[in-house]
Amino acid sequence: MSGANPRKPEERGPLRKGWTTGACATAATRAAYGALLTGSFADPVTITLPRGKTPAFVLHETELGSGSAMAAIVKDAGDDPDVTHGALIRASVRVGKSGTGVTFHAGDGVGTVTLPGLPISVGEPAINPAPRRMMAEVVAELAARHGAAGDVEITISVDDGKALAAHTMNGRLGILGGLSILGTTGIVTPYSCAAWIASIHQGVDVARAAGIGHVAGATGKTSETAVRVLYGLEEQALLEMGDFTGALLKYIRRHPVARLTVAGGFAKISKLAQGHMDLHSGRSEVDISALAGHLSELGAPAEILTQARSAHSAGALLALAGELPLGDRVAAEALGIVKETLGDANIAVDVTIFDRAGALIGRAGPHDKP
Image (tube, rainbow, N blue to C red):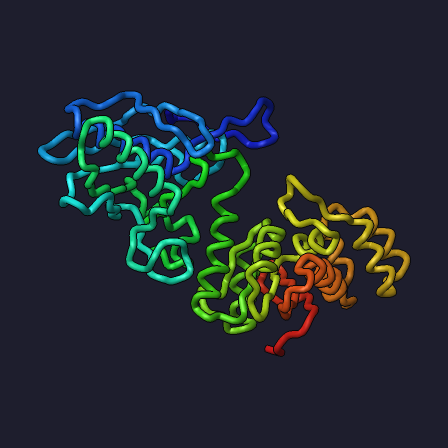
């Protein structure tokens, strides 16, 4: 069930859904434990997801030994640009000690939780509650069918998982050594970026658990580095929100911190200033007319305004502003949107705008001077 190349959303035709790492781990667990009980692997192996879907997974590798079995499945993320698309998810199931129930272990390529604030305790393998529950349920079902005790040790591993994890936010969340086994529904919806949004939420939880009072959500690496230097923030205070400003603000409204800084480039923060909560270029556009209006209010001469109204990008318009504080004006507008979204949450908030070199070009809200 792999081999598909994710398509871009602008390509025609319905986008194909895929399966989470948690669903793949569950299917591999079912196949391995079934073989341990019967001596043969079901291939393909079918599981029931939390919302009732029953996908079938083809086994890529199998191994049956004395008291243990392993099955491996290649993850198919459908048309989602998922870093784990094509990854080999392995489940090794071994008979456990009587009365121990189902226990989980991190194999190669699966991380271990090292910081509080996540739904899994420190020291535990980074296998989230929903996948754990799904795997425990298939073990219970098979054990009941075959008259077994259901005491098993499940080790999940991901080939090259440590390298893949370098492209995720796991390190910042304190998940070290590999990937997380994720998935609430078992289904990957193309371009929903649910895993990214979940990481934003987890980042807030980790920061709160660590007692960090000032966090910063940045749209990209340049603004993240710049805001970290500006305020001397620690690693766990940085929230890589990317384009998902709305996801960060709505979550932090329900789980407040003392202080929030929103940081980004001029174009992204311009879109936020215009009320957009999703800053992706395919889902929101910069309002050049509105930016030209700001220049007019700041006293730009007529010839500059004429050029600004026909500017091809936010960056081109910013270049026309010269010494006029357009960055501060946009930051102030964005701050108003942020405060409105946060509602009555007791959070001190400021907005910072940085250029491509990381220089501060706009700022609004209460802040400490660097």
